Length: 131
Image (tube, rainbow, N blue to C red; front, side, top):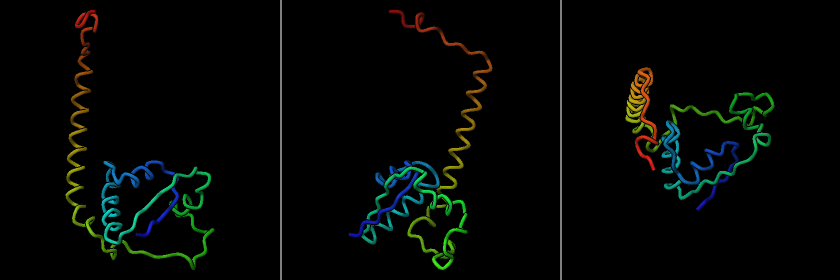
């Protein structure tokens, strides 16, 4: 077994990788793909949180600020040519599921807003459950 370690300034990422659990989309797809890849290769991944000030190089890379980095060390990747184990199969289903969830949430919020506009005031607790 090979353990791969890394640093991140995002505490959410450390928890997601440690527990291999998240409900955030599309992070859940990436996490599932990562879990399958690690299992197939008998690898494990460990992320350690570090303060943002200690992670400025990674921040620059994620913001495509690359002038401080040696171009000879750059690895070019074409996501269309990457062979995923499960992500391709799940992408469309998950897109539909999360779009449906979003639609239902918006409808629920809209309905809740309608109730508020009607000046709905529940009975005070001292009337409904006096002690």
